[in-house]
Amino acid sequence: AAMMLGGAEGNFLEERHRADRKCSLATVEVEELDPNQYCSFVPSLGVTDQSRVLVRFGESDCEVTLRQCMPGFCYVVRDFSFFLPRDLDVHALARGEPIAARFGIFSNASTVVVEGAEAKVTPEGLYFKPTGGDITLRYSTRTCADFYSEFGREWPQVCTSTMGLLSQPYLVFDKVDGLGCTSGLPR
Image (cartoon, rainbow, N blue to C red; front, side, top):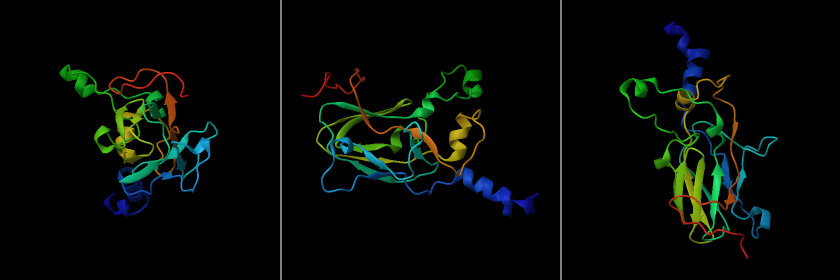
């Protein structure tokens, strides 16, 4: 069996733990933005039929700038993995501890850094309130092995493909705890 690890099985294991993939979000690089490009990014890998942004496991040290966001208003980049069925943490249950909420496709809350905005990472996505017009987002995505350790019921568990797990940023007019968003439509 050890001889086989250099073959297809070895590649499978390597893919589950890769953390060196190219970033899937890019900055809109045009001189003048169209209004539909305000506070958005370019999905380098494309989008699904439902306009979900395609991302990969194991993207590391990524950076994207969102230009011309409206200061004081709250936005969200929705993480659709929130809707996937999670596996139970049986060890936490056995110890009588609460089951911690995870952070979907992002590695964890500490690996998401937002400059130029107040921000909050939740299992539902990244919420942010710009303090100026442009913000910079730095992020990493989870490895395939880490993601499927929580979402093991998802099948097939393909580590090399893309998944439509994020939305483009959009305005949120609900109250977001801890961000003090402006409510109502911009004038």
